[in-house]
Image (cartoon, rainbow over the protein chains, first blue to last red):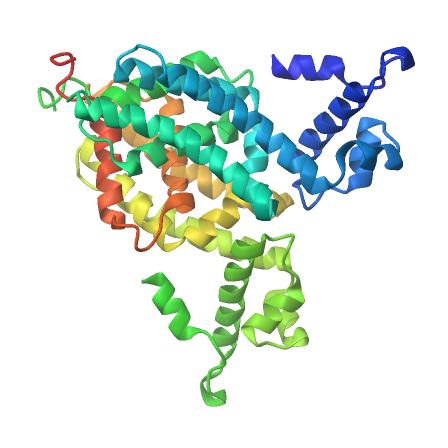
Length: 212
Length: 212
């Protein structure tokens, strides 16, 4: 559905509706498409301008630099994930319910932002200095919310482990959804999230030790 | 240990030991390092020659092109994974034991080849035409071995699911080890594999439905 929204909003709007915000939005959407298709290093600033239908001078006025665009793209979607993780972890649910909700939230955001996730997995190294550090800090805060839920579940005797290996791996598994998910592949994001939540929580083995 | 081997074998060998195989090996090792550090597109052929201590003409004689190097690097480690998956799935173990062995094999190969895995996750799109198709075929064959083990486990009533979502996700989770594994991070590859195998097989929840 993010795709539909994006397609609908692309192209040159009537002049009377064209504000700085519209132009900026067109540039960002063009950059997301191009970075996802060709990589950050493989995309030229002129191409972004062509696809967004924005002239060179206006492009620099609105975005500053290609790295600034990359930073904004990765920051915006990471902040969405962080906000949702904060909302879930600050609620009153038990840790297992929170973990299930975190998995659902993460899978659905990743499916909606799979191009941004692919850009991040490939090109996050192109963010240098302060921007790279700030993005890493946002990501660390997301991971900390997951870790706190695992720690609380372990302390309450609900989980067998709160090992960082598990936190890293579960987040990694969810991020990788971006590489194999297909919009019409037969599973909705919610179904994928439920399958993955069931695996993380209960494993794939049936009625442990009673069969086989 | 792969790192140690690599470090030991770098640098210019005595002229009397320098064979075509040595030169070729030095070029491949230099390319793995540079592609992992700077990306395929960010690495120039001249840089590979400098790091391998091989002159420009000899470089082209030994490797043909930068894409040819990328192809050989990704093919070689993927073939290792496929060979190990074939060995495990053709054995006499029950499906759960096979799944555990597949996870161990995959994690240990990924830790040993984490630079190749990082190159693949970032730059596999740079392989065009026939080479891209051949690599995808090797990867599909690996995934098929995993799927056959899951299918056999499901048919025998040992596993709750053999959904492709699980196969994709478990392989994705293991590949992502490359992004957070640190050689002296407190967990050996075998320990990481065991934690992940336990999670996939039995989940993170304790004594199901009896607590909480």
